[in-house]
Length: 86
Image (cartoon, rainbow, N blue to C red; front, side, top):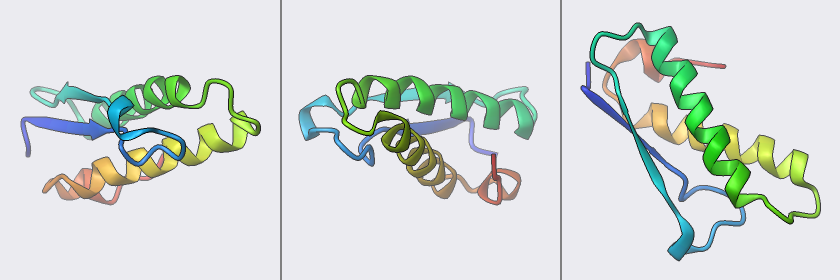
């Protein structure tokens, strides 16, 4: 299992390259469910910042969180997280 999962907000729909952020989430001693919950919370937090002032904020927020969490899961070698769906 990877010790750290990297959550990149570069896939956010309205993010400018200069405003993209990342959050590191430690996976040490955590179950896949705990990691998934933390990834979702981090994606939500990043996407909330990226969709401020958006015309269709709810839809853009939902798409941003979905894209960001999928991109995060795609980076891990842990099969329990690669197949994760929230």
